[in-house]
Length: 359
Image 1 (cartoon, helix red, strand yellow):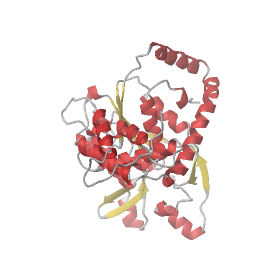
Image 2 (cartoon, one colour):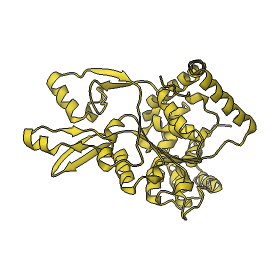
Image 3 (cartoon, rainbow, N blue to C red):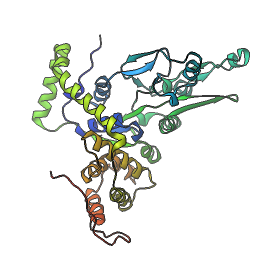
Image 4 (cartoon, rainbow, N blue to C red):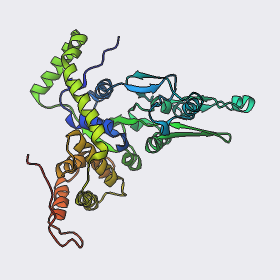
């Protein structure tokens, strides 16, 4: 039996853990790119978060793991079965982490259509690829910077559309492909093109822990886990269960979170002042702020949510030169906030009021 290290037992790396949680709450955020040196718990955190989540309800026997309660996003095979029988058999299983090998081919990623069977028997025959396996799960790409740009483009397009589309010899097939995309990389081994960097919703840069006490705690916990994994997992089960409940509540709250018009102006002003290209940063910053509000149990997006979101959304969108570190001038973020608050913006004539929790 393979034991998974508990998510709650990971020492430090709070920003990375928060980015993973937010993408689970709202997968449309667009995934997270984790940049950092080896041995900083990147892979451990990805597998641990999946293990800490509630089980998924899936159509029994469906290679795309369709949700029987979501008729709109069923694959065509499940739609046909539902139409014929009037119901879908289902089962429960854990969220899956699908690993994408660095040397994966396009056919292995998107899947293949059996052209001969289609032409001969008139039956659609599709061999599922990695994007099918990852539907409603986590697609984990270690060393994403070493993948070919073409494969990365395919994956990012599928993540953005929530669908994988294949066409061979004039025959086409599509299936749902909604997943949490997590890429990890060591910057010393090469960079991603800025265009690809921008397609990842969030980005965190992590380093080895410098605190003496925390490093000792890492060693101590790992030793306990290896000595008696069942006991160690049991000791951290309550914390993982509490996190699971918090994530479920946040998912339920997500669509009810209100965003004031002035918050949207602040988000837009931050992107303008920091000279961020395009509009993706604005869209993702709003989504991330909403997910943060839901995670903290708030009913409205507040300024502290925007501030926290900026630390995850902006770093990889600020790079202008190769080998430049991912730094964001957070004093500029604060200036943008103050600019809107004091009404030094466009044609706003009166001072704007904002609700902000006391720290």
